[in-house]
Length: 124
Image (cartoon, rainbow, N blue to C red; front, side, top):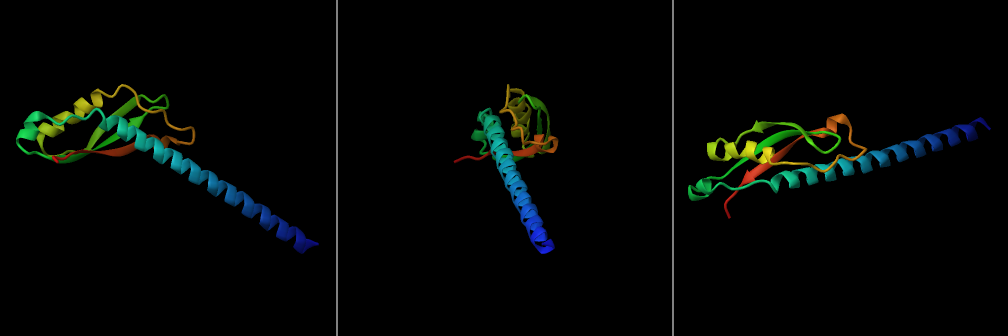
């Protein structure tokens, strides 16, 4: 009888572990999808300066941003500049034009609200 109880306990613990793992996977997917939507929202505000186009200037930067629980932009900083002043000046303009962002999913922890997004200027 003890062995039966022990086997049942292992089965129950295994089921709980599986359920928890599944919930974490869904949460991670939700956070990842949300971050992707935030990045898309920010990139839609991006403009390619005419002076950069005429000089064939390209570049990429990284912005570290924090989103508040209500979807507002809580803050940002340039984590990596392009090195091209024409493009680097655009970074503040882009972030200043962001009105609102998608609200974070309930599954997002405080650490999930701050992340880095790339901003890229490439000529086709």
